[in-house]
Image (cartoon, rainbow, N blue to C red; front, side, top):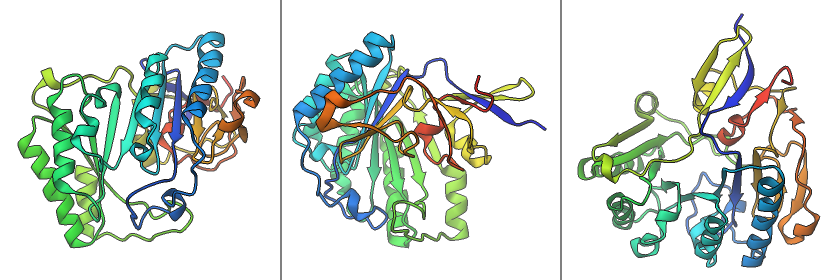
Amino acid sequence: MKIPIRIEKGDNSVDLHISWSLHNTCNYRCSYCPSYNQDASQKWLTQGHIVKFIDAVHDYYVTRMGFHKIQVSFTGGEPTLWKGFKDACRYIADKGMTLGVTSNCSMTADYWDEFACLFDWICLSYHPAYVNDQNFYDVVRIMHDRPDTAVPALRFMMLPENKYWDQCVAFADRIKSTMDNWAVEFVKIQNDFGIDIVPVKYTREQTEFMRERGYEEHHGRPGLVRPTPYTWDLRVVYNTGEKEKLMTNDLVNRDLASFVNWRCNIGLELLCVDYYGSVTRSGCQQGGEIGRLNLTDALVFPSEPVICRKQRCNCGTEIMVSKSRDGG
């Protein structure tokens, strides 16, 4: 029987990925997002916290560990609502680290112009109950027309109500009919997001639509496409010796994302920062907290992998961390 025994990162993957929930302030109140992710209760973050943490990461992972490729990916809340966001991103870029961001695209095109080029990847989430269609389009247009800016991935949050469903499909069709380069993902709203579970039921036709058209991309004008320098693919090694290049969703869809008792390199290849300032190896909390942003001098970065105790890995960034059943 062919079973996975090891997950290896792709050849061009980053050495360290920092997944950072910057704060819990958001200007939307989406039903599928838990209240603690949008209630603006955490207001302690300062530019000084950012600088001290990034300096500590650089000293440990670059100077001591010899890492070369470090990427910081921001989420929220809505990260662009933090007034220090642009300065923080510029500081990180100046330290030689790359950047990614997930945003609801509520900021104007003027905000993103001359700034979006800092990011190696940009994910813009389309929330039909709150989005301003014209502003969203104008931002995507700015990013599309600048060859120094990554083509944004547009994630449509597919609420099953007909008016919202049709709104998402219509806007995606507008993007595809008026732009040469685009990446569109129709996202099934999971019923296990957050603590307060929000059951979401789709019709058979809606389910089939997302199965067939979950992700689509098109590069009609390659000269306007800025290639992403580091890919996020991985290789699965089987007990037969066979290796297979896959994406994280492939493992989830094949029910191969269970790594209980495996040795996992979270903390060595992945760090997570939440809006309380807690720094952990991963969002699943394996290995516990390693420090806090307001106590940077007390941070103790990991030097060894951990043994996974979770029955299932649900996060793509954690799935792609290298790990092994045999400890090798």
